[in-house]
Image (cartoon, rainbow, N blue to C red; front, side, top):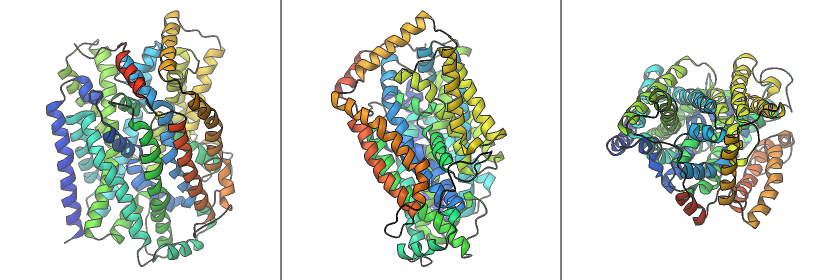
Length: 593
């Protein structure tokens, strides 16, 4: 059978599954919260897998090996986002759920506006969600178009629109619950596809297994195998310097601090899956796929290019070319489906949650003056999700940057939400006007350091955004800006409740004290200046020094995440905490007429 037939057969089955969940949600979801946050009923296994798929996406499946081909194992340090993404979840996810249960928040704008007693924060959260959604979803569609072109010969524009239509349909019909359950299948396809493609590359006759692959790496130039330096004084990356690697990870930390993930946390039926998602599914399972199998793909493509066996022009060409070169028919169809699933796993929740945020925080609150039935809210939500999907298509049709770098710019708008989250969940003290001006300055800084003065001092846009935002927020405090008595009382009540319901045990306190040292040290050695040691530190089993360094710090990172999430109790929840969140409610959010 023609390999393309396998692609179309498996794609057809996948579309049926997606459409079934969309139509199921269309006929069953009858309330605004049911459509927008799945009625706070997302179960353990669904979140465990769907949230992991949404965190890594088509950017990981297609863009990650492509950048390893382009920059070498220097870029493979980005695989550490299997740790830096869930670290953000460890800081905030459980407390997002607790706040949502107690106060009835539906959108992150609800939570931030209530805590800071300032509607400006709500508007800026909407803006951040909009920017994040269109850029991040747009890059997924770019990857889909390239893949469809190389594997099935479909023109890129047609392929892009077709893939956008699939994700649009099940998102607008079924809501967050449909996106989540489709995400369960997408996780399996994503991880399985990465591993299958990497396996077929390294076991092909052109390499002959790990021994031949390791021998082939000896011919690679140092620029592909060593971090070029600590910092580049000027504009542009100056290569993947140590500080570029570190600050790029700040961008990826923004995935789980984004408005979309905060809203998703509100939709959980229980926070029990959080620790397992962060430690096992993300750090271990996806880490295994990235630190080995995406590297097999990216470095394999570089070696094949040097041998004249492969000729990619841009990073997005690498994975599709490897697929068509190495995979037999049924496996080609399965890996193709894995890539499409990876792409949709992120585009879907960001388009869906973005529509909910705009509908609730702008249309329902200001245009309808908190009026309107559940049915009206659901249909206007669908309209806004459609607008976001169209905007994402426009971004994808007009963008010329590398897929991964667009993703880094998009996730910077999630990173800057640390400003508000640190205040709400951990009591960082700056006035509400500081939160507003901090977010404004952070958004401006992100645009300036990406489009005008790109990556000053070889530090990523996300660093400049969060750095500028926090400085401005605290500058407002230093200049003597004060909150109203009502705001102070509101924040005091929130702080008292969170501290009482989520205070760690005595053992947890000891572990938190240790983690305040261990986590920064890990960052500095695994991602910061310590990566320069990894250029020549040690080797084992044929892995060059830089790759060996990454693997060792990934393994240590698994232990660190286990200690942070379980021993330090950052992500674990007792039955008593859940009972209190269920019973000690103080709903401050109106849902519908």
